[in-house]
Amino acid sequence: MKTIFFLLVFSIFSLAAKPIASFSATPSFSGEELFMKLDEVGKNGNWMRYDTLSISDPVLEKVLKKHKDFLAAWVINSPDQTPKMAVLSQVGKQEKLSFYEVDKINTRPEMLSVHAKLFPELVLSDYQGVSTNEFVHKDDPALKLKIDNSSLYFSYTRRDKTPLRFDGKFASLSFEEKAKVVAEYKDFFLYEYALMLRAFIQSTRGIFNWQAWHWYMPEWNQKYFISSEEISAILSSGYPPAKFRIFSARTSRQVLVEMRTDGNGFYEMNIRMP
Image (cartoon, rainbow, N blue to C red):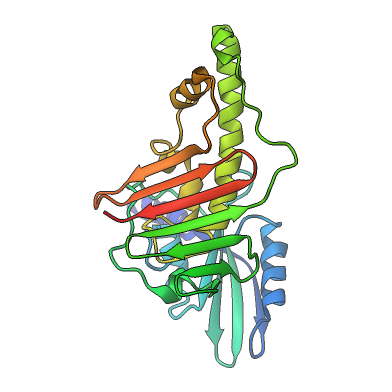
């Protein structure tokens, strides 16, 4: 019986990370080749860069132990496909890109925090300077970052053809009608939030204790995300705000992290130190 139990446990853990593909390049992958392989294996999913300074997961750690001095790693964790991990490593005179299917990423949720020390080479790796404290994303100049002694301010502009409609007659609706309108607004804000995550969170590393995929997971973000009650209160006021604050968190060190949208293609994330 003990032997059977041991084999069963071994089998379960051995399935935690399953190799599914690997590719090599001499001496290295070009950027185009690398992202072509990521898109091919990931079925154009949202690959998120693994941050060595952020919370990890036992399943992902198991994969990384096979690649001791890995160059970079990415993770897909979405409801529509099995979680995957890609690891880029140096093997002799070649680069190797290895892909794995992993078990459910189930790290226990933790309170959001901002690292006490920020490293410019991580935070600004995808940005270029335009002045002493102003930076733009290397691939999209509409994504900007301003840094001063007490804050990091991200902004992104991608104007919508159809701005968010504000329902000025909300207060006169029935209970059922109000619930439907609030649900529609919440769905819209979830879409806007996902856009901001791609722009602000996935363009940097070394700022937060959360990995990029944690920001998408309801069990991690729900207490910081705009609530149905807050949406109802805004609509009941009869006046649209200049910006909707859809994410707000205050860390244990009293750092305030907020994301806002104007509902018409302008987005911002402000990280304010105490």
